[in-house]
Image (tube, rainbow, N blue to C red; front, side, top):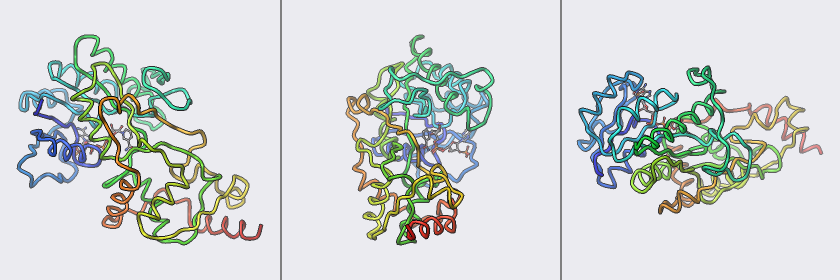
Length: 329
Ligand SMILES: NC(=O)c1ccc[n+]([C@@H]2O[C@H](COP(=O)([O-])OP(=O)(O)OC[C@H]3O[C@@H](n4cnc5c(N)ncnc54)[C@H](OP(=O)(O)O)[C@@H]3O)[C@@H](O)[C@H]2O)c1
């Protein structure tokens, strides 16, 4: 297996996947609309086929042009898109769909493949675009993969939790890096022990390749950092990576409410812990980057970028009010 087609490939996870595939001697073709800059435009090892994946004919043309051994689907947001892809690439050695940890219905620790129940998806949810139906649509995509495998198609899925690292256009981690780089004291909601499992992007990329190479048809594989850190530990790891010190100030619901805030106003805060078991993926030989190293690369990239995470900012003034309230206690 050495000829890979990446559906997507130019922004974040897909971009790292292309790099990982090149490092592992694959011939790589990316398939996308060409709306985003292609970071591989000057790399003769990466071919580009232009097209919209929602156009079935364009996907078929990509298949006939590339005749890939492995297909990595980074842009399937609706079950119909997964269905078209598995039917277009019926004879490949591996089709890997990026699902999501959000596909899980039941809140349990950890969430396990084949054990933890997946979300249902109504016909209405399957075709809508809202954030609320994201998890159900991803879960239905997984069911399409299972059904395809039962017909002999070598389809598999990976389920990453929150992905972070260089080129992360969601800017969720950038909010916290920006706070650490620019302030001495920062508010962390709750007691700091809250956990929302995260996955370093290069590890998601290697997971996709390893699942294609070693995974079993009809199986899903969770992806997340092997060592989880709490929200407060994350802030400390960022500060270490940035070579700075920061004072973490805990603020409970009451103190936050006095400034018109609530814990969920802080990005990457989640009330109930979200933890994915990564044992099944590790059994395939996958390893994750130590969190200190992952954060060092993330902070370095943040410094070189113009991302500041401001779209997630609950407001520094409100945060200052919280700090003042806590100082008077
Ligand atoms: N970030 C997370 O925390 C997280 C967590 C779990 C799962 N995921 C999953 O990861 C995937 C997203 O990864 P990414 O955005 O980082 O991947 P990416 O492959 O690096 O970037 C998205 C690519 O898709 C292309 N694209 C968008 N719409 C397209 C269309 N209709 N037809 C063809 N190409 C299209 C974009 O280029 P053009 O716009 O030029 O076409 C771009 O190349 C999604 O499936 C998401 O559900 C993400």
